[in-house]
Image: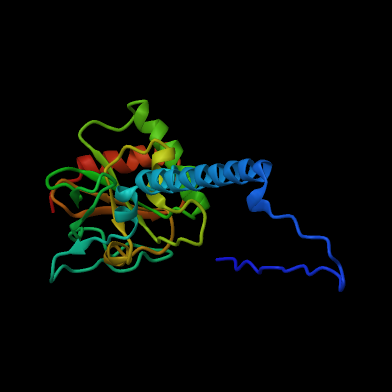
Length: 239
């Protein structure tokens, strides 16, 4: 709030010239009336703009559903065994273990469990600030739009690593801009990332129909590598 200071100008000593009395001048009355009308109109316009911004969530897709998504975290059933961290080299000890089911909020504000029971699934963990994720997401979406996903396999995502001070936040708005269609849950506190042994982004996990891990990987994959991962998940023998 700005404080206005009243400035009083006094006449020189001995001056007999009276000060103009604005209250008695018709022209000044009209001018002041116009000024009041302009100020009232400006205040009304400001109030309307604020109301529209609040109702519309800022106009950048940051609506209530987006806000809920980016502050929500998945839940993992008590007693669920977390997967070990993905090693830098050598055999992956998580292969053959049960993939932790995670319950979370999707971008529409609905409850979602991943991976879906009985469905071979490719899970990809993405972070809105990760440049490799920013490159992979539109490439993978185009691959899906072209119908290249092997039949009988699902692709789903976990958005995690939320940071309001880093690029492309909120993540839900980023995924919306990319036209991202796979079901996606929010993992604001990293619960799902820890449960799956995430080491870097993007992080990939292929899960067989029986719910066991077939393969994990990190970084940008070629579309052929994603296809191979999907086929291996679909054709994996029950353990």
